[in-house]
Image 1 (tube, rainbow, N blue to C red):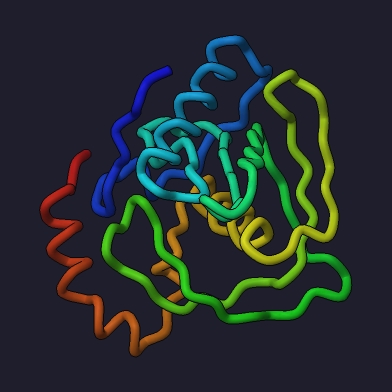
Image 2: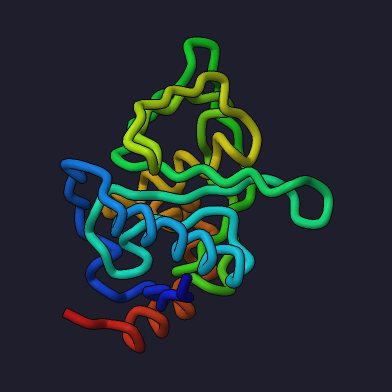
Amino acid sequence: MALLDIKIYGESVLRKKSEPIPAVTPELAALAQDMLETMYDAGGCGLAAPQIGKDIRLVVIDAAKPDEEEPAPHIMFNPEWGPEPDAVDVIHEEGCLSIPDIWCDVMRKDKVWVRYTDETGAQQEQHNCTDMLGRCIQHECDHLEGKLFIDKMSTTDRSLNQSKLRDMAKKHKKA
């Protein structure tokens, strides 16, 4: 396993829509394991392939509380999600490994379903994903569409973080 380089706000791969994965290969399964190791090392709970410079539809998530719960990693190829019928909007603070040192309130659904292919190539579907898992699914799947949590921040949070974001984008702007 290897630690991967996490792309930072300003790098164009973070704004690209990711390509579907036609089949899970041993190389892609190994990449997912490297992504998990990178995510754990960085102290995150989710990581999407664009964040490591790959424009493919792959996310890894572990919403277990460190030092309180056993790890519960999820590897999702080509994930699709939607709100459960009784879902409501809730606001919660979010951050992102690709946008270090910025935290702000983001509105998301409180309960979602997700459908994906796992690392063995099997189709999976989970319902009633709530709390951190539900939030991570939405956040990481946004990455696959080239969307970032800062796109959902309030006008006030945007004003408060504007100079940090501008400096970060300028420092990390790459074609």
